[in-house]
Image (cartoon, rainbow, N blue to C red; front, side, top):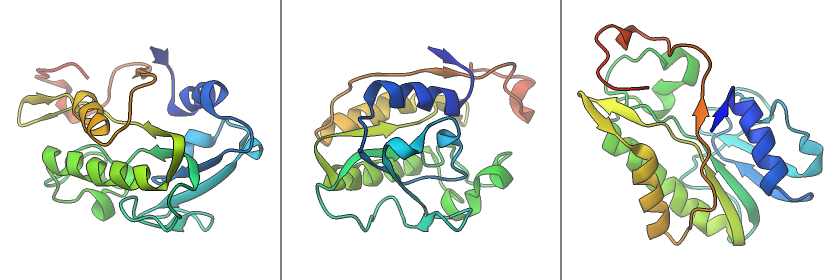
Length: 184
């Protein structure tokens, strides 16, 4: 278990699993928060996102990448993982209109499925897929995304090497705190 922020967690994961000179495709780069504490000069970072937020990030859908088969050492996958059939509190922060508008939990899992399948294609033999997800509640039903995604990954030929649980500092902000029925 790790307490803190994504950038600290990824810094530690890179120290454990990222060899110098690796080619890393962060195919859901967003604002690049993962990499803020990482010395990216040790490897090649290919930043892409379906809704790029800066001029260094290329516009690619994580389900259809332009990379050659067997050409990438590590694929980092962190798509929006909160279902969004209507307005959502995170809309402004995560470009949800371009990514998850109108999607339910099962649709988000399918997004991961297609992205993991594409990651399998571009990864070199022995390559690594780093997947970030978040369990969620949909219609008062707990959805254990991490288990669903682990099973999907196994079906695609991946195997689990490690699991990191990130615990944020302080209470989880949001309008759902009153009358909350599930842990966040």
